[in-house]
Image 1 (tube, helix red, strand yellow):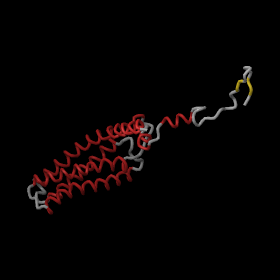
Image 2 (cartoon, rainbow, N blue to C red):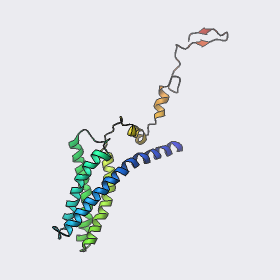
Image 3 (tube, rainbow, N blue to C red):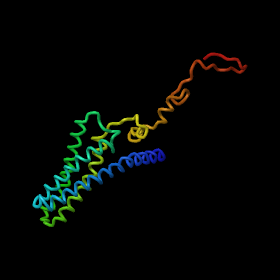
Image 4 (cartoon, rainbow, N blue to C red):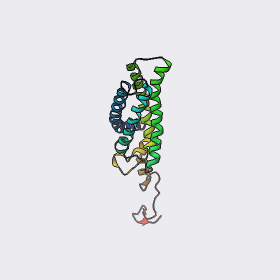
Amino acid sequence: MINSLADRIRGLASLFWREVAKFGAVGGVAFVIDNGLTYYLMHGPMTDSEAKARFVGASIATIFSWVANRLWTFRHRRQANVLREFLMFILINGIGIGISTGFTALAKYSFNVTDKNMLFAAGVVGILVATVVRFFAYRFLVFNQELDQEPEFSHDHEIIEGHPQDKAAAASIPGGPAGTRGSEVPDQDASGSTRQS
């Protein structure tokens, strides 16, 4: 029981690590796009609209993130219905953008922070919180289509749903736990001659 649980935890860690590493790479580039554009807008064209600047930066980064995650991170899980996938992605990222923009707005309007660097930092904290929410939402709600044909991901259902292969294998072996004795196999009596069951 304990060994089975430990194996399942290791399997889940391995499964998530493959995707977290890719998600982290995409997120790193999106982070640079988001914060680079936001910083430029805060200190330039949108100097008095820090929350709006964060919203624009986050929106551009979101478009990049959807394309990169669809084509790379979760390519084996992308849905056949692209429109539904995109709408779910937009909905989840709307929540994420709301979190990052909300942190900036909260700092400015609720705590009366006026220093642009502090407002920028508040948005960065919001991005980190939103990133955790996004990963799990992407993984389980947006890019959740299983393509078991890919060997690298062929056992994801077993890891997550807890259906070990050995149960299916044991059931398919004649004479195993679920097997029955076939009438084609003759029994031998004490004299060595055979008799049919």
